[in-house]
Image (cartoon, rainbow, N blue to C red; front, side, top):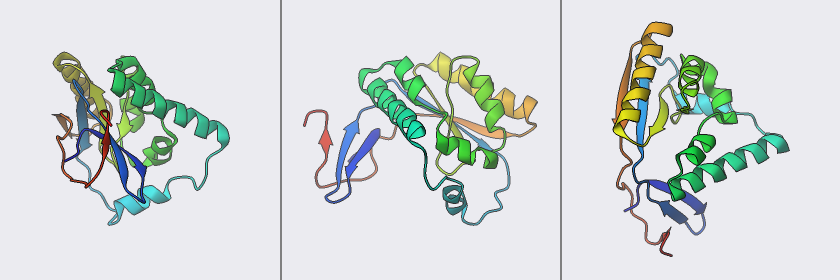
Length: 173
């Protein structure tokens, strides 16, 4: 079974590369709001631009490389550089209540944030319990005191694996 971070290398044939996420936890915050759209994922996909310019592509490729290098080398700063502020988040942020307020509050303390899936949940990362609690507290205070929204905030570890493939590639080859 696969879990942690799985990079899709190709669809035909399916090839993936598994990167173990050691000492990484995620803080997921879900605002207590009513979702009106029946097809939330479809709405969020349509919010994305049909194309991006070369500069945006290069910036986001560099961020992805930073994120992957950071996870593989356990370099928190590389992960922070690679996580968040994507053109995807920018396009979808108008549908996620309190996104900019959360981003500002977390970035002012050196943390990153991203929209989780199709939203409205947001996610951040931490490496130790103290850091996790600090991020969770910032999120809670921002939702409650700045945006006037209740939210459920969870600290989660990477999943050990939920799917099984016949063949996959990991760091051992």
